[in-house]
Image (tube, rainbow, N blue to C red; front, top):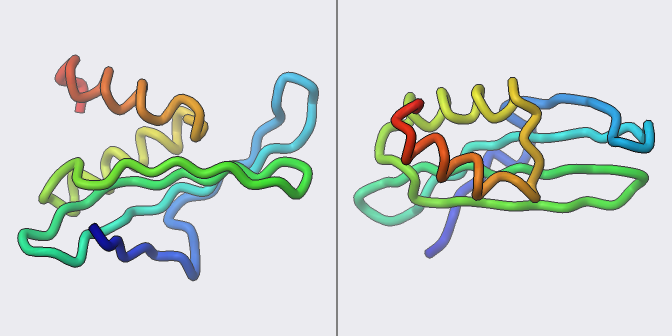
Length: 97
């Protein structure tokens, strides 16, 4: 599946410190499939000391507004790429989303 991403500017950005006090920039983006029906997902990139880690979950929902709401929840919780899949699974299974 091909994804379109808002790569020119992050939808949400948060800067926090990791457990060692090193600045960690988290960028949260919506991703959109090119196929019909259109599906939306999320991508998180973490940048620490010049190194980038990324995780993406496509095809979460057909609703752009629902995907944006999820993105805000993830950004407000400063979810990292390493925990993205578990957090989204918990939100979907728990009905909190």
